Length: 166
Image (cartoon, rainbow, N blue to C red; front, side, top):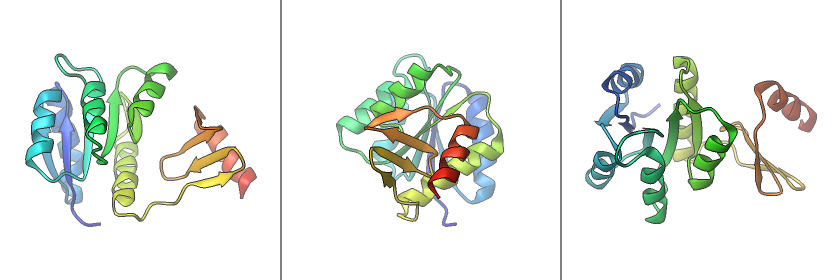
């Protein structure tokens, strides 16, 4: 895998350091920002491949950062992190343009798998979206939509859906 430049935006230095400790051994260059405004400054100053941002931060939160990126038509992949695990919170982030969502606490192996999937997509090597009538699947992101509306599928239901469609 080619090294990528990843921006980690989180108001917690502990979380930033932990993410950096997991991503740097994979060869990635990791930049940090302690909030949304500092994150936007990093976006202006660096050629980034991926942003991992906390949703809940003082000042400019991750959703505002995401909204500003998308309003500028910035296509960079964004992985949203949050301690909030309510369905409406995840759907809101995805509808604003997040490419993936991970709730805290999370397992390092899942974080790395999601980062790898987003990096593959940024290189154009991800699986294409598959369509079955009104049903659309993105296998890399483990996301599905029915009639354009996102589906919240637990892992078991996702696996059953893939089994039935293959």
